[in-house]
Length: 153
Length: 399
Image 1 (cartoon, each protein chain N blue to C red):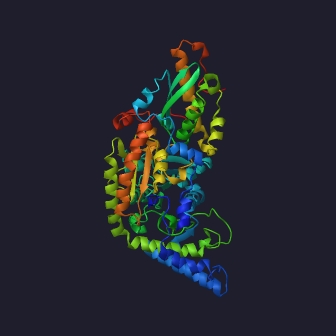
Image 2: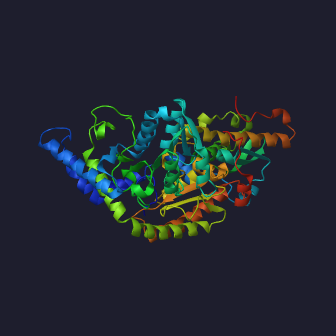
Image 3: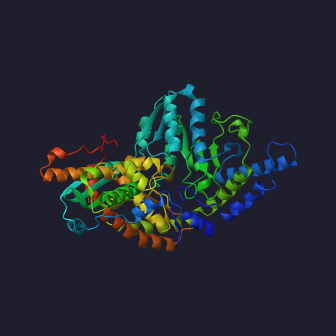
């Protein structure tokens, strides 16, 4: 029986995915979680019919992402990959916008130690929300010429 | 703590079932087709099992075909009958809430030249018998209607459907895999010509199904070889599984009435407890429903996330049906109810069983509400159930 119980601990996803899913980083549970970063960019992508919606807020200073908050209606893969993305863009005193825009879904997957193949597309939504939030910041700060496509080429 | 509420996916093998199977996984390993003593021993027990199953179902021994699974029985009924009888007509009927073993077989027959009509269900998940009557034409030869749905547990009026089909000369198959533990299983009362049963849903082994085939119904095999099972299903008999199936069916039918009442009470407590949560909804009618099924949508959160948080607490359930858990599509059954996709993405199936206790229900009702609240706090959506349902099905929906 002990053996069965141990096997039950096995997970469909990697341990890193599980950690980010069970304890998502930078998630906005309450409105105050968003207010405390005084965001100057917000993006929302996806649709409930598709099974995932992602909303992200950024605080950008000196062209660096100083803070990130997000909410999601999504599966474990969407939650874990956005949590990881929020960590990646705010690392080391904040990542430069141009470097944040260079983060590929593959980079997130690598940090998550992979996702099941059918779930990989779920990890793209956080990335799109990030780009939408950065565009919103560009729009708000008179830098419309810097706006980017939501989907990467 | 372990609370297994996924009995519609599969049940455990009962100890008594396992016990009668073990000799045939050990020293009594003969092939029923062999002429020596070990073969005769195997042939005798397979015959005894067939007799027992036939008696339990109110059928004749020659009407019981052992197969490799519920899926295989569904396939054998559908392909076996339609291919054999295609000279009689090429129109066949099923419903939008079938198991994929039926739906995908019908899809395949379309490619072989059959015309398919899919019957709608209403918001409660039930077919309309008048629609069935209207769907039948002179060209209709076959219909397949699920007895009790695997995702939402709704029970179709199968005996009435059988009468209609009989009057119009249409052969009826029903998938009774989920129904066996709780509903009428006398074949004369069900009235269908072909009935599928699955061992792994009735506390028997996996890898065994039965197809009841009324004597005068002609079908062709989908598996060819040694001519076992009256030439309809070749392959050496899985003696241990056949013996286990007969025992499991015996136990299921003998305990059916009291178990239906016991499980039904627990199920009702679970449903009313979970519906106390705001913006939650029972999918499918409450009245005409398997006593072990509670399928609930929790709006504004995603079912897989809830499922995996429950998993951490030892609560094992399903989103949609377990078989489609690799799929990203929302449940076709929830969509068939005319509900929006987001309710399909938010549904959880709790399927109770004979091990379910009141303390299991209490545990779920204590642990699930905080998870629902947490996931809703994480969600950017704040729709009310009325808003979501009023928005209806997005007909232009695509990923």
